[in-house]
Image (tube, rainbow, N blue to C red; front, side, top):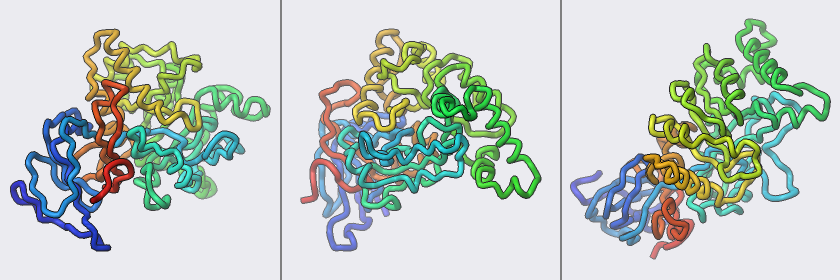
Length: 398
């Protein structure tokens, strides 16, 4: 389909319009650590089909990006976006009738209009992991949705990306006042152990249990498990519980990090580093965090924290705060390292790196053209945003 610098792929949409977009002469930050100066990106039918210099394409819409930063769309891996429209409205990702609800499917709680209303793309966010709240030991599934689209089906990147739960104090705060289990950490881990035992049971009634059916793929290593752990003690307890199982663990909302995590088989999603009201915020060991990043640990940024729908700008603030701490400590952490934490790493953790998270040929065209580097200056603006090749902000087709 490609020959030299000439492209001869599909040129027409089904409705007869031009479907080729050429981003020309941009500084391409691919989300994998590379920066390609004065590089072109060719998009055909919503996919990135060619990356290179001096690409020649007939009948394409051309977007001039000279002197601008071209980046993958950012991914918030752990959010409530699309499940709670605003203050005082129903939180459809927060079922608190039972602390163990792994069988619940967040896909059915997703409201495309709620997601679209947020206009996340105005802050460079083009996709999000949509998850249950932190109030249950196991709250249900996590799905990955694009930030723009008309239907849940069209926006969905992966309907079952992970199972989401929590072992932090939110669970005790939810059920303790009702005088029902779990009221303590002992209760939380007892419930998990009982569910694990049922998954390993040969009893017919256990195998028919919907909770068992939902959790067994986790124990078999076929479905990642995201567990909220604010403290090192909580993280250590989780790692101990699953140390003999092939579980794909992702420890989320983490604050107390240390080097002991370097050799542990788990990914990490950081808590909201801008939340000064969180009692664990001051406990962040940034030196240990930077050592883990340089060691290649899969660590993603998120705006989720303990909020249902935090501000859209929180993800950017977290990135800037992380880089400010790196400068303070003299750590060798670059904006490209942090960009990976916003793009390719969350995509890898959620199992969607085959479609999103980097500017790579064959992947979805979730592309943001910034006026400058948004990780180096707050003055940088997202001038053009594409989601699945559709321009949702900025320059439109001629």
